[in-house]
Length: 311
Image (cartoon, rainbow, N blue to C red):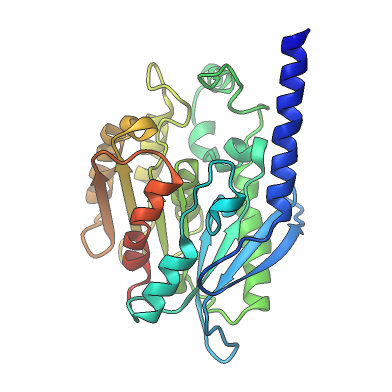
């Protein structure tokens, strides 16, 4: 009985923190945040959208747009459960002020908490697997025994439809943006890295570049008897966009979850080479000792920004 009461208490504490976090508008040290609360969609559940604008944002200028997943973790560590952030406002503001990148706004798309894995897991590679493999993957748990997927219906195709058909038109009509592919980018880490790669493959006419940090190639949390990475490799072998018009950034560390990624990233790198990607339009960087955290990604976020948004 006491264990049950303890679990209920922890559940309500967690829910309370999530509600508080979602209610707070991030504080930034550079630029400003404009929030669109509970942005509605016919494709996915509502979520907050936090748009970062540089210090001298002006409707008389035109701006590139960087769409980023896990939007709640980008700007302000004080609203995060782990007190970590990407430092997007500091990095973007500094690089813009130094004229090292084109002027840009950042659209932070909050995840849907329990639905995050379902929304960020690339759907077409998954659906290429045999039914018995799909069923086994949906039964996968985290190390603590918690279900990874919650339900057996992936939502990543709908998530990308929301991004392309609803959010992008809204952003382009609400802000002074450069709407074309060459000025539209997408970025994320871990599962957010996977959905960023999926986005540029599924919508190559929309996105001109993708940054995939600590890409979670295993899809779940084991590599034993796991058919997912092979399905991903087969997919990108068929669906990578043209290297003539697209840029793709990858990286990975070697600690915690990142310790699983190197062999799979090397497979992906081989495919990119075969498809004609080279130093001008693709880079993969290894960071020995780096772990799987916002703190680690914040230290190197400037690298994909420079790569994608250079003049």
